[in-house]
Image (cartoon, rainbow, N blue to C red; front, side):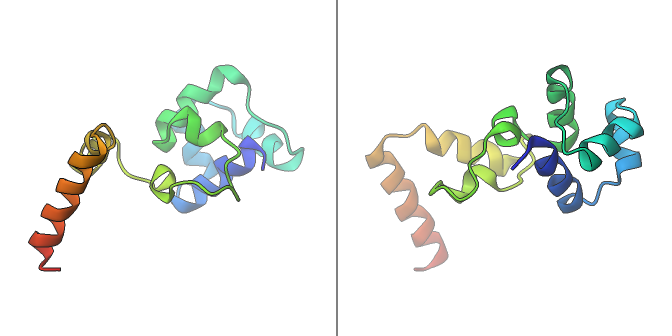
Length: 112
């Protein structure tokens, strides 16, 4: 999948129009339309602003990971400023034993 195709999928998921995306990124609407019509990708100097507006990491935008066996949480759209995101990031840094303790605590809280 092209980067531009991922951008349009993200725009659809986030309910952002091309016009709104253009005004938020400062990228001309005609350029954005060209990505779709000509199946081209954005210039590399635009990637960071695109990621910022779409609230995704460059890795998420640029990786061609579709169809690969990856952890689904890597691609769930979570606001990176949220407590949920911070929790997941901290959890990922834990050792295996500590992860198991967290899982056990969550199960106990949920009454499982």
